[in-house]
Length: 189
Image 1 (spheres, rainbow, N blue to C red):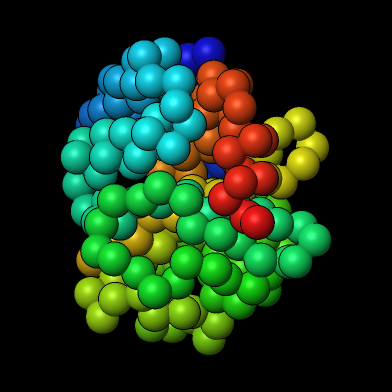
Image 2: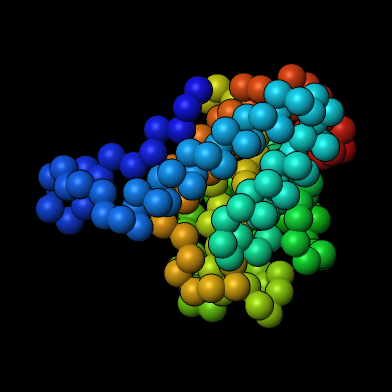
C-alpha cells in the first residue's frame, strides 16, 4: 500500500488545482515517512514496540508533532485506554467515550481537528503547552478499534494532508501488525 496523498479536489473552487510548493514538499515528506513506518512495521512484530517505534518515527520526522500516541477502545466499558506514545507524560491513561477530543472521536468515528484547543469546550488539557490536536480513528474492517492522537505546541498545526497521512498510517498498522486485536484485549482489561 502506498500513501495516496492529496487530490486537491476539495478546495473552495471544487476543481482540480496543481499543488503549490509547500503542498508538494509536504506530500514528499509524508510519502518518505510512510515508507519509514512501513519498514518499522515489517521489522518489528511485537505490537507494543512496533507502535512505539511508529510514534517515535512520526514525532522525529514531522515538525511540531509534539505528542504522538495511540488510544484503544473498550466498547464494553465505553473507555479508551492509552497505548504506546512519545512526548510528555500524561495522566489521561483512561478516557470515557464522549469526554475530550479523543472521547468524541470514540463516539463519532470521525477525525477531529482542533485548530486551537483553548477554543474547545470539551478539551481535556494534557499540557499547558498544547495548542492544537488531531485525532484520527483506526478501523479494522468496519470496527473502530482505536485512534492516533497528535498534539502540537502550535496553533492550527494540522490540516487535510495530516489527516490523509494519518489515516493511511492507521490502515497500514492494522494490515501489518498481526496480533493487534490480542494486544488491545490485554491493554483494555
